[in-house]
Image (tube, rainbow, N blue to C red):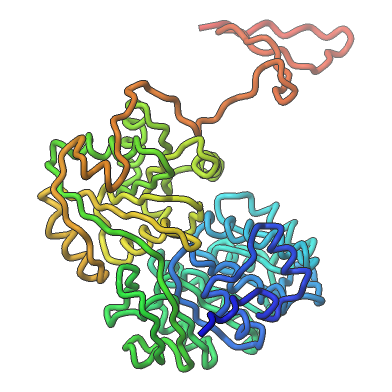
Length: 476
């Protein structure tokens, strides 16, 4: 029996202008989650989407959302569509993904996130925005300042709702949803859908249809990217999480190999350095901001171009860090769990839990950084004897079957699994460090001579004729 023809975007009800825009971005065929949800969203249904990060969720909810807003320009300060994301990075990534499709349809997309000037965001809203991508806290601030009015919202998407709850954004999230018209279409997407968002689903979504990529969530409420990728379909209420009153559809999961590397405490630093010195884009997870900075510094001292990302960095520092990682200037990113969600960088071939994750959700979202867009990936957890019980518990809760190995520095199996190698030992500079423009460059502002200690800079105020000059201040 011949194979069924592959589904195309045009088959899902998208117009040629949007299909061509996707093709210009190198996107020819929909991923499973996109093929599943786009027709239902275009038909006006409320939708729950559960899919691993990297499976195409942004286009899955973004494309039909843009289509439903096409032809109805939004009034100043009153967006027709809203996308809520838990972090600045995820909001900015969503805007980047939807930029080309929105231009093709003549729609205006903008972000409103914390850490950036709110005045500029108010001005952007005042000029008119069709789709506003925002973090809950910043959108709440804009509503309070009367810069944003949600009374005209026709479609709202909540991305990573469970993470919003974990970060304490649930009050802001419900405050936003209370201002959205009851008849507005509501979409909720996440890598995990569990009891943390049950109340939101039951209160605000109307008989939603649930689509799930991968095995349906276990009773504990966790995803299972390492589980059997067999296709299944169930009603969500039979899975024990009570999330949906509609249908659930499941498809395949990413191909990821999981390993637990058991190491001696004294060998851990050397082994992590050898893994980081591999070829390819590598993401190392640690628990604290201090640990991220310390490890990145040590790796650079050993000759590995590594950068650190965590919540203590300013937005411009985060932008430089992500840009260096994305363009390959820094092939290694050391991050806290801020990067587990919302950091969409392709071709991350290896994820390393330098510090074991605190719970199964953290493991799953860290893991979702690799094997994106149909690629394969490897995830390793570096475990000392002190970590053994914690790692075993997390793996069991996450339904992950991993290969356990005892390894030492320069171990052959370490090279086979991760591509580890000895670092050069030649210190490298921080690829994300700010470089000030040279004095003679056009970007450098004109500056006067430096003022010696004890002197003050002369001012330009002209003295009235006949007035006496003030004596100089005595120096100390």
